[in-house]
Image (tube, rainbow, N blue to C red):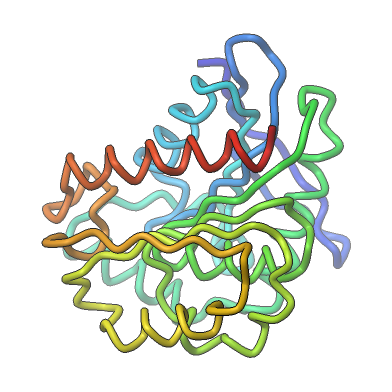
Amino acid sequence: MNASTISIASHDGQAFDAYLSLPPKGTGPGLVIIQEIWGVNEHIRAVADQYALDGYVVLAPDVFWRQQPRVDLQYTEADTRFAYQYMTNLDGPNAVQDLVSTAQALRARPEVNGKIASIGFCMGGRLSYQLGATGAVDAAVCYYGGGIQNALAVAPSVQVPILFHYAELDDHIPATAVSAVQDAFASHSNATFHVYPGVGHGFNCWGRPMFNQRAAALARGRTLQWLAQNLG
């Protein structure tokens, strides 16, 4: 892969890292990949590379940099405790602003020759939703976004196409939360929902026990088709 770590200027005069993965042809539409709570780890870098191979210019920013730069955790019990601490201490407004800066930096890159979208997982799914509400991206994808049901005040601001993937047996996001998000977007023609039967939270992550190959493949196929339709 043609991958590297680059620096992005923050809105408050600082800088943070992002993992950049370029497509084989060198140019394409842009994607912001937003991490889970374990940081820009091996899995997230692999997801970025996977989408780069599909022809996208991909940036995966370090969301936790204001607490600790370059968090890169594994799915062990000890690392997961650290991951939850980082999530608990996340400065939400600044995190969204950092993602806006990431989107702006991505859009300005010479390799990007089209629109840009965000794809987030778990915590990143909520952040992708919130980034979509800013209008900094042209489309947003949310994989089992934890806490979206508690941030529905910004739902009217989401004017870009948005895609939600949820797990039927999610032990972090109850069915009532999914219904609340669906109800908030019931009158929005720009929102698409998929609920995957018989699978749990984190089904897309092949590094975790709850990985479900069929659901992950189906969600990825739907995401690629949806991106092709909405990014051109």
